[in-house]
Every structure is written in C-alpha cells, then in structure tokens.
Length: 328
Image (tube, rainbow, N blue to C red):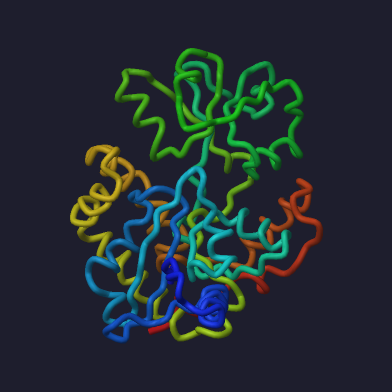
C-alpha cells in the first residue's frame, strides 16, 4: 500500500511505524477488510498485461479478498526498485532483469512467466535485414542502455564495429537511416512502421539462443515468506484472469485503452493477436499460463554469467517457483 503523506501533527512514533509497515511490504486492509496489494507493471498498460486487468475487472482478485492496485510502468519506472523498497508487493520484469537484481543483492522470487518466449528483436528496413548478428557491424543500432541481451550478444559475436546509439522510444532516426537497426517488440514498432507505410523485417534475439522469459511476475523472498496465502491468492486469481482474457480479449482491451489512450484500439488488437502464442502456446499449451522450467532458468543463468552480468552462478530453484501456479 502506498503510504499517504503524513499530516504535520502525526507523532514521530506513528510515522516510524508507518514506514516500517511500508518497507515490510505489508499492504494492510481496506475498509471492507480486503488485503491491499499493488502490482507494478513493466511498461504502460498494454495487451501483454491483459490477464491482470481481467482479474481486476472480473472481480477474481476481490473474490479472494484482495484489493489490487495496478500501477503502470514506463521508461523511468523500475518495478524492481519499487518492489524491493516495499512500496509494492508484486512486479513485472524480464527474466534476465530478475536475475541481475539478485546479483545486486535484491532477493526476488519469480512466480509466473507471462511470455513463454521472448518477443524481442531487431527491426530493419525491408531488404536491409541480416542473417547473422555480426552483419550489424558497420551499422547504427538504436539500443536501450544496459539492456542485457545486447551485452550477451557482444559476448558471443564480434560487434566491435557497431555504432551504438541510445533507443529513446522514437523511431525517427531509424526511419531516416535505411541501414540502421532498432530494438523492438514484434508486437509493437513493426506495426507502427507499417501504419506509416514503411515495410520492415526483424531478426529475433532468440536466434542467438538467448531467450529469457518475458513479463515475469515476481515478489521479494521476504514478502513471500510472510504472506504465502496472499501470494497464492494473487497468482491463482491472475491465472483465472488470463483464461477470461483468452476468450473475451476485446472486453479487456477496451479497459486497457482507457488506461493507455495514446494507443489506438486497432494497435492494441494487433498486439493481443501477436502475443497470443507467446502467452498461451509453447509450454503453456500443456502446463498452463505462467509455466516455467528449471532448465530454462539455469540456461539463462549460464548465459548471463558468460556475458559477465552475474558475479556468480546459483541454482535456479533458489529464485523461482511454480507452486502457486499449481494451486487449485
């Protein structure tokens, strides 16, 4: 629960107690007795968050006694820092970000992987794509500073002659440079390019073998140990929300559109259709939404260690669990 600004006449003792509550990750209860919790998204409201919005809209969280606040992310928002500080109980981040946080001393536990595969890619002008990542040499690549997969690619390929420029969410420079590359989600930027009459093609990051889980739901180890029932209720309600979203996506897309009016409904629909296989296919087709394996996590740990992004290896079982996905 986000603590409201304390009045000037609140005693120092009460203020201290309030801070302790916030940092412990305890959301408290609302007037009706429901447990208040917050989930911080990894980006602005989008179709990739549909199951969470569905669980809220359809009352699945409420049925489990949860009063859930969904807080959107953005380019200047770190869900990991917010959750680690105790200002939210749950967050979404990519799998590699969860592991790197552990490397920084933040003990997080992954609870569900909402994308079974990574939809991350490089975008090129049509006819100017690449077969091998080393063909990026001699070109300009617009890359978000500190993005883990770029460090991994540089550890596996000679990319010393790539001109790296920061990706700031605007494709104008990409449009003006026919030989450039831009980091994208296949559900996003290629659609907007097509709307502007610009044909593109993509090279998936996963072609390198680097394929982290995306949109990972997590909490802190401390919160999980103290609030296991709340975690179980949140995860089971969210999974139910994904089932509703699969059958009635347009209902939820309209809600997402209200929270993110800068996106057209058609673009949201394109994202929903594009991401459907990533959410409900692959391992999730057999095991259900959110499924994760020890093998996939251990592979990612090895890759991040090889790239120098982890100081030491550890067992995947220390930082993920599917127990709450299996709850009835």
